[in-house]
Image (cartoon, rainbow, N blue to C red; front, side, top):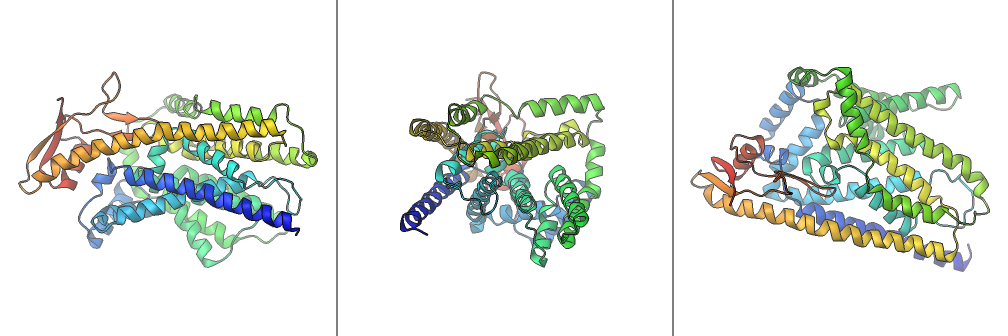
Length: 448
C-alpha cells in the first residue's frame, strides 16, 4: 500500500469512528432524557425473580408469545433502583448503532469482493445519511428507539434479524453453538419478522442444497424453532379471542392505512439529496458492473418491505400499532442507503451540495428533536416530583393535565416523541401503572 493510501485510510477510519461516536452520543442522550411511560410503569414492580418468571409464564400462556422479550423488559424495569435503566440506555444506544452499521454494510453489498473502488463506501457522510434515514423514515421512531418496552420488542429484533440477513446476502453463515443460540433467541421477539426471516433462511438452505454448497442446518433449524416457539404460544390465541373479530376487508383497510404511513413528507429531503447525487453526475469508470447488482438489491429490499407488510394481514387490525411497520421502514432505508452509498461520482460542486444537504439535515434534526425531548422530560419530572411526596401516606394524587395540539390530545405523537399523558380517569391503564410504580393510591389529571 502506498503511503498516501495508508494516510487516506487512517483519516477515513477516524471519520467513521467520529460519525458513529456522534450518533451514539445523541442516541444515548435521547434515551437518558426520555422518561418511562405506559408499559414501562406497568412492569416497574419490586425485584422478585420468582414472581417475575411466574408473571412471564402466565403471559406466555394467556397473553403473548414474546417470552424472552417480556423477561428482559421486567429485568430492566425491576432493577431501575439499581441503575439498570442507565445500563439499558447504554445498551439500547449500542444496538441502535449496530442497526446503522448493518444498514451501512448491506448498502455496500453490491460491491463485488476484490473489486477496486476509488471511493471508501463506509464514509462518515454515508453513515450520517443512513442514520438520519433510520430516524426520520420510520413512522414513529420514539416508539422503537427510545421507549424502553418498545425498543426491546422492536429495535432489538430488527437489528438482530437484519444481521442474519446480512450474512445470507454475503453467503457467510455461522455454524457454532453460540450462533444457533442467538438465532433461536432473536426469532422469539417479533412475530411477522421472525416468520419472514425463517422463510428466507429455509429458501437459502434449499438453494445451497441444490447447488451442493454446505447448508447451515443447525442455524436454520434454531431460527425456525424460535419462530414456532413464538407463534404457537397459547397466549397468542387467548389474546386473539378477546380482540374484535376482523373481516378480510377490515384488515385490508387497516393494512393500507399502515402501509400509507410509511411514506410522508419526511422522505422529501432524502429524495432531494439522492437527486443531487445522481442528476448530471459523471459515471464512475466501473459503473457498468454496479448497475445490475444495484438494481437487484433495490428490488430485493423493496420486495421484502412489501412482503412484510402483506404478512400483517395475518393479524387483527386492532393489533397493528405504528411500531409494527418498523421492519418495512428499515428495508426501505436499505434501499435509500444502497442508492446513496453507490451513487456515481460527481463533480466537486455537486459533491459539496450533497454534503451540505446532509449537514443541513443534521441541524434540522437537532433543531426538532432536542426541544421535543427536553419538553417531554420536563413534563415527566413535574409529575414525578408532585407525586413522590404522597407515597408515604398512600394518597390520591391530582396532577396538572398536559395536552398537545388544538384538540388537546393526551397522546403526544411526533416523529421523535410518543408519550401517553395522565388522563382524567384514575382507572386507565397508564394512571394505574404510574400510581403503583410511585407508591400512591391513584392519580388523575385536571385542567389547571
